[in-house]
Image 1 (cartoon, rainbow, N blue to C red):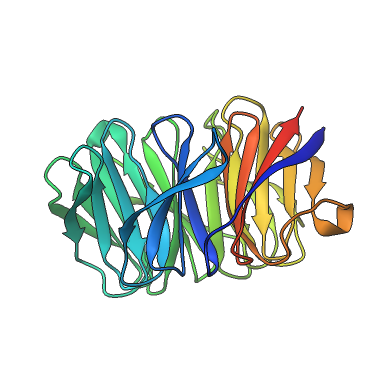
Image 2 (spheres, rainbow, N blue to C red; image 1 turned 120 degrees about the vertical axis):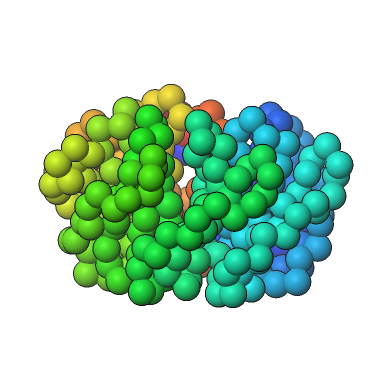
Length: 300
């Protein structure tokens, strides 16, 4: 496996916390500790425009499948809804008063999930933008959400070290998974649905069986917090991003380490914490506290 950096995207003046691919091919969005949500081109590897201004940091961006919408979760707790057809912010979802850390959608239910530092997850209708439910997941921060491929269960990663699995039908809790010793920052169901991967501030990656919730494997993956986990869309690999300034690519079948992208390994990589990843085919995008976005071509 080889990795080649093919582009640097510069323009952010502060740390970048999140990125999301657009449903429109060749476009992606980033947000961070700046005053706007930014659109970039993968065709020209260049800045396109600031989509809209924001009053504070953006911690989460989500573009739900089948909707011409983009959601931006802010440090203030507000969620801004941008409509691509109208080319403007059309709604402001105001439920949380503490930071929003993750936003996901359940396509078959037309519902949006918003996770907050207040320990709750709010559930909204994607059609009407009405608040439908509030799930009291934890007494502490809910950092991340992952929905399994069948969309029949979802998992929340919390600051109290737990992963809590819920039924998507009625949002009833199924299981609290205990194993990490620090806050859970990242979660991702395998595309096959067989297992759930969790990454924590304790620098460990844990693989959990999706039926029994037993631990399949513990990987001492990084030196510091695991900020994000991203499965390749078609190949049996997943990547992890860490506060230790490295990206690692793992085999999704045997969980062996296949590649390390870092300055220590001779790559012109990030110099500060790597916060989020996104696969665009065999290209991997990474964003960092160092204010840059990098594009990596991974040759398998």
